[in-house]
Length: 275
Image 1 (cartoon, rainbow, N blue to C red):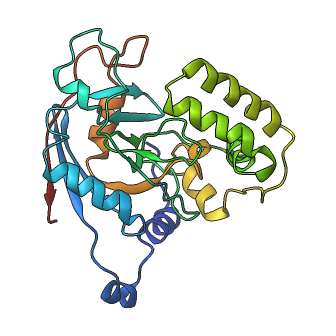
Image 2: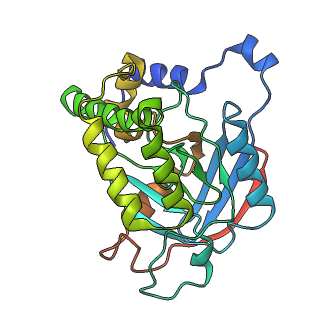
């Protein structure tokens, strides 16, 4: 990792903490969770700005749901993903990524929370309301971006936002109803067909406020790094406060064609801790 200038480092500290002494006296302390993995320990701090995801993560940690699960999807310079409940007993070659508890968490997508390196975010499927998996999560490794790449990421963000907003446009309510019926019936060919229709319609859809990556987020992406194209489309609900080198080491492992590590990387235990 490139060394940051003192000014850049000070800027990062300011934008990631988001508090001053007066704020710290009034804001509740954040909860910390330790993941003990086969590659080392990662300590996560959960955001109070996303209380539904915070409380759900605390619950599955305290219930032991994450213990012995794998990081089943790993893509270097992107992210490491875990939390598939079927991964606990998965055999080599098993396809993973569909295991969850039987509920989802409502989206808590806010403009100030973004995909800088080390953030904790919720995996999700293709539900129109962007609801999150009950157990699956990812930790961003990402990479450093320049302004040109950030402009391209901004285009991708707005493409996804166009699909989200057009699905909730009353002019397309019948299409949305058909999509929801197909999802409930697990009729995936029909889901794919309707989603493709929304995708094509969204190319020319402009009835929403275009998103611009804020200058302060751009500065972080150009120094610390991250995965900006996911912003405003997935719920970010925490960040790594210790163990970023462990995240890097997991991201560097060899994987198969489905991005599953060849040699299992396991969460041995997860627990709520005090720093």
